[in-house]
Length: 178
Ligand SMILES: [Fe+2]
Ligand SMILES: [Fe+2]
Image (cartoon, rainbow, N blue to C red):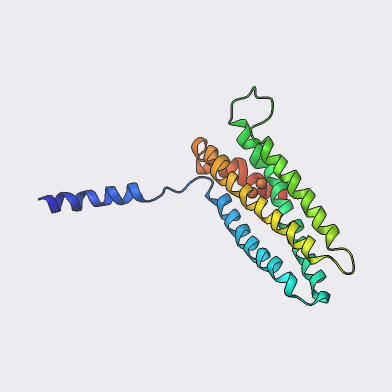
């Protein structure tokens, strides 16, 4: 009898244990893909000191290119679409919008990308200065991603359906890229 009861309850237990699909899952998938690219960039940064001098500048430029072409557009879209969606769901009346500190992170990230760009320009760049600044930037970006995933996205997961997230956020992202 006990076994029968357990068998009966098993699907309920399995359902409770399985994580429900969160409305923000498509956006989280973009973060997963970017983090994979950040891992590759980190490996490239780590290899710069071992490269022949002639190759170091080339690799630095490729790294700067990644930050400019992949990371900056992601941050720009967040500021236009994702962050306002979060701010709209938070109580008004504060001196600054809820996402103000995240927008400031983007400012610092943009400034440090500019510094990396400048460090990669001389004919014989300084590999120590470049790798130090690149490592700082990678650390900041990873912490920033985690804050988005652990603090901002749960607000949307709790206040939107998957369909609302698609209409208000993903469709707006598509339109922004057209
Ligand atoms: Fe961001
Ligand atoms: Fe992000």
